[in-house]
Image (cartoon, rainbow, N blue to C red; front, side, top):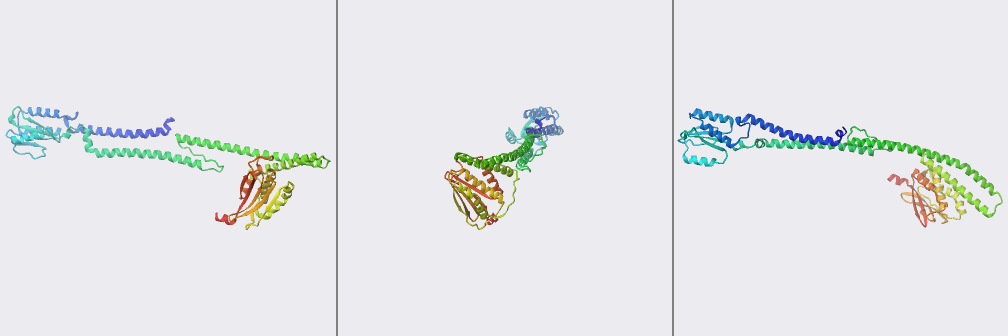
Length: 460
């Protein structure tokens, strides 16, 4: 049963139908020929006409005429006329007079001379029409009778059919071929339409970002493909739902861990402060300072982890407003200036006024971006002891440039982490509809934060 629902079975049915039509056409032609044979040529109907048979019967019947008369000859001619409608017959007496004629088309002389008779026999010998000359009775003085039959009478029936109905048969075959082509085109057009429908279903996305399911109408090979496609979509949807649940659990776990880690970290910080009040050796003071640095770094990592989790869950507070970007960056730098100065950094600040100084951003997000970038310089480019903050203005954008002279991002550093800080920067920069570029080499790193000018946005 499965085979009969397949496309292969349907196409084989089309081929068998086309071949059957051809065979039925030939059978119909043969039956038509047999019908003609049974109704058209009398006692010769059961067999194909033979020249020898006609010649033998013509001689036999002419010899059996004992009382030669015009009526007897006329009856004989009529009998043969019924059997062979296309035949012509005539009687020539002993003295050469043309007597009885039947169905004679050509002009024959009323008086036959020996010379004309000899010429006539010579012309008819082996020619068309087929000619039989027989004497009447046993006496040559009765003259002779002539039977002329067109040669096409002796052709096989199919040849006559082709000669008479050749054009009809030709156009019939062409019609069958065209019918087969049309049916095949419709068959393959249906297949193509279903495949294009399946392709559209693959390209269209539902609200969850997955392809939509397709309605299965048939159970052939394409129907099985559509069913497999629907099953794949269901599996993808279930997998995505599981992934979303796992992601939600992971975010909740990270949020809980971040919160839980803050409590012991606060206690450690309080204890380190208490220890700093005691009298310590130089080595103890260095160890305490290293511990305090580690506490600060851990606190920053926890904060980054919490922030990244909230950003991925779209739960990080976002309130954009118009701010003076130059003033904001300058004020933010004042909080970091003592930190870099304490670490021995050379600080190079060149903040030039912009033509378009108002940026529509969330100040907390922009401050977090700057904090992460400055923290990144402090932790990973400490060897260069340099930080530069500059501005750049073009016709299409205004930008802040943060430079260092560290070993570059491709080189390992003692404080290298998981890169959550830069991941947060990337998400926040895109959330503020800004752009940023990073150019990192062994001699240093340059980070450019760009803001498109209002005129440039309008042109786009």
